[in-house]
Length: 527
Ligand code: NDP
Image (cartoon, rainbow, N blue to C red; front, side, top):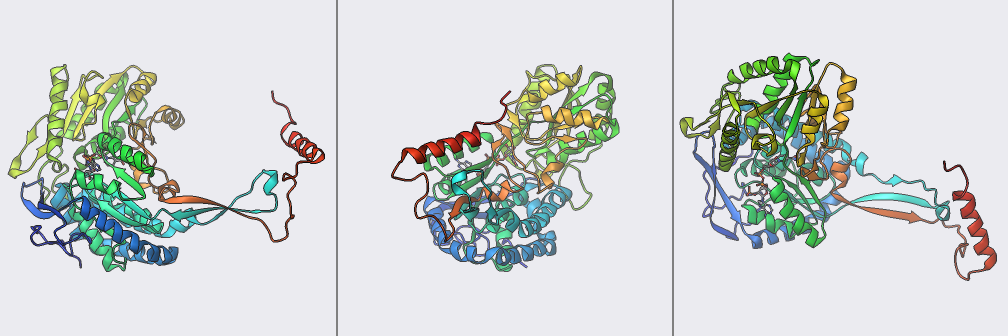
C-alpha cells in the first residue's frame, strides 16, 4: 500500500510523495507546510517547485506521452480499472489523508470524494473509446460524394490540471482521469493547501502500472500553477473566477485551449406547493455539506411568501441541530473545518455585512477555534436582500441566507441576478412547471426537487455559465476537450482524373454547376 510520508521537508525530498517531482533541489527553499485545519497541526511539508522544475517535468511528460498513447484504449483502461480497485482497497488511507489536509468530515470525504473517484475511474475506462473513436460523417456537400469522411480525436499531448483545495480528490485529481484515458500525459498542480491526496493517488496509479512520468504532481503555490500554464498543450483549471481569468489570459497569449470551472452562487427556489420537509432537508444538507465549501453548494434560497415562515422554521431547527467540529470518524460531526484560512474571513465578512444591513441570524453566526481548529457555525440568515454580499458574492462557507419572494417570476429574476451561473435548483410538486422554471435559470445545471446531484452524473456535462466558467467536465465534451480534432477525407482509388469544378474553366461546365447549385439550394418555400 502506498504511503504519504508525514512531516517531510525539502531537505528530505519526497521521492514517493512528490509524484515524480524533481528531487534535485529544483524548488525554492522552505517547502510548503500542510496544516490540518481541524487541529492546526502541521501534518507534512511538500516541495515548492519553481518554474525550472515545472519545465523539467514537462520535458519528461512529453517524452513519456507517445508510449502511453500507444497503450490504446484497452491498455489504458486496464490501468484505470486497477486504479478503481486500488481506491476502494485503500479508501481508509485516502479518507484519512483527505481529512488530514481539509478537516472535512468522514462522510464528506467518503461520499463526495471516494465514491466519485471510484465511479470516475470505471466510467472513463469504459466510455473513453466510445466518446473518442473515429466518427464516420455524412455530408450534403456535392463535391465530396463518394468520399470517406472521418472525424478523428487525437490526444493533445501534455495536459496541465490545476485544482482547488475543497475537493482534492474529486476536483483536482478527478480531471486527470479523462485526460489520461484520452492518451495524454498530465501534470497536476494541486492547491498548496491540499497537496497530499494528489501525491497519494499518483503513487497509487504508479502501483497500478501507470508508466513513469505520465502523471506528475507539481506541488507549489500560485507561481507553480502559473509556470505550468506556460508549458502545457491545454489547461484544465478549477478554482476562483479571479485566478481563472489570469489562467485564461496566459492560455490566450499562448493560444492553447483552457477549460475553466470557476466559482458559483447557486440559488434554490422553493415554490409554495413544494414538499417543504424535503426542501428543508435539501436546503440544510446542500448548503452545509463540506462546510459549504462546494462550488455548487446552495448559497442562497428564495421562498414564496405563503410557505416562507414554515420553511424558515424547519431549516433553522435542522441547522441548529448540526454538530460542528473536528471529525473523529464516521458519524462524529456533520460540519467540519474551514480548510483555507482566508475563507474564514470571507464568511465572517459576509455575515457581518448582512447583519449590519439589517439581516437577522437565526442559527450560528460565529467562528470557532475549538481544539486549535478553524470552524464556522452552521448559519441561517433571514431578512436578506441583494444589497448584501451574502446574496451576491460567493461565501463558500456553512451559511444559508433565505429571502422571501412574492412569486416564481420574482424568484427567477433574483436567481439570475448574479454574475455567476453554476448550479441551481427548484422545488415544487408540479414537476412540469419546475422543469419550465429550470429552463429559465441562467446556470450550467438546474435540478428540480434536488440539488448538486448533477455533478455525480458523469454522462451529463458539468460546467458554468457567465462568470462560472468556460467549457465543462464530464460527458463527451469532458474528454474530447483533451483532444484535437482532425478531419480526414479519403477519396476512393477509382476517381476522376479531374473533377468538374477544376481548371480550365469552361462556360458550359460553369453554367452546369451553377444550375446544380440552384437546383440544390434554390428550391422550396421560404415563408
Ligand atoms: P484559487 O483560484 O485561489 O486557486 C485554484 C488553484 O489555482 C490553486 O491550485 C492555486 O494554487 C492555483 N493558482 C493560484 N494562482 C495561480 C496563477 N496565477 N496561475 C495558475 N494557478 C494559480 O481557488 P481556490 O483554491 O480558493 O478554490 C475555491 C474556488 O474554486 C471557489 O471559487 C470555488 O467555487 C471554485 N471551485 C469551482 C468548481 C467548479 O467545478 N466550478 C469546483 C470546486 C471549486 P494555490 O492554492 O497554491 O495558491
